[in-house]
Image 1 (cartoon, one colour):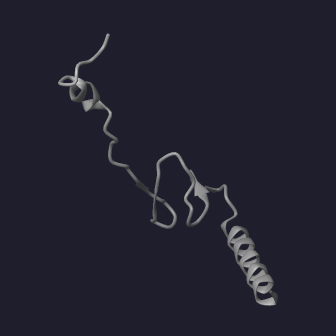
Image 2: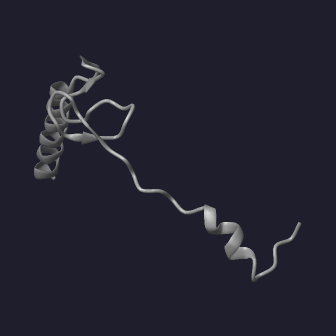
Image 3: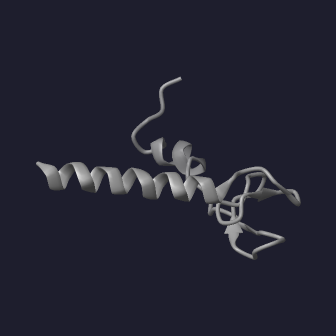
Length: 73
């Protein structure tokens, strides 16, 4: 059924976004979203899931290559 202009706000009162809840990493202590791997150390549930060091190295290498190509032009 159609909602009138006056009742539109009552219908949408439950559509508000809630506050994000973070949990602390057991190994490094940084905050991360629950049920996700820690972006700082790459661990989830006590074991390494993400290789953070290789990710950082890849990002640095890509930035250096970009800077090198920009300097040539």
